[in-house]
Amino acid sequence: MKVQLRVLMTLLTILLISGCANETKLGHHVSLVRAEQTYNPKASQDNLGVVPTGSGERMEGAYQSYTGKSESDLSSSENESQFLDGFSK
Image (cartoon, rainbow, N blue to C red; front, top):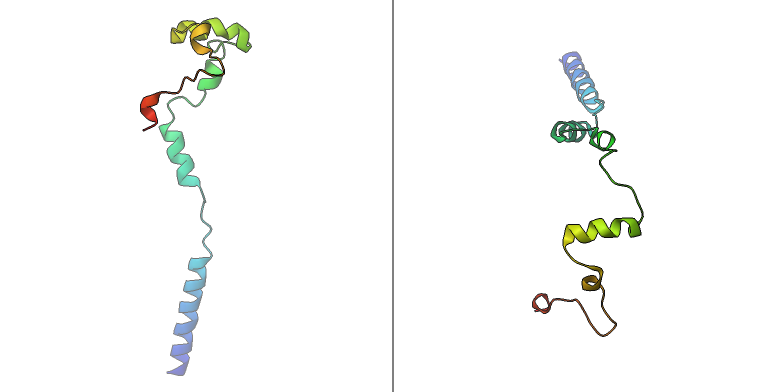
C-alpha cells in the first residue's frame, strides 16, 4: 500500500510540475488580433507619394483651405481669448 501511494504521489507531482513548465507565448494573441484587424499593414509605404512634405509655412495654405479659416481668424491679441464660454460651465 505504501509503495502504491508513493508511486501515485510521484506521478501526481510530475504531472503538476510539467503543467507549470509550459511556456506561454505572451502577447501572441494580441499581435494576431492586431494583424487581423489591420486592413493594409503597408499603408504608410504605399502612400508615400500621397502624403505631402513641407514645412509649416508651405503647409499653411493647404491648412487654411482645408479649415476655411484665414490667418487673421486664427490669431488673437493678448487680451482677446478664443475660449468658448459655453464650455466653462
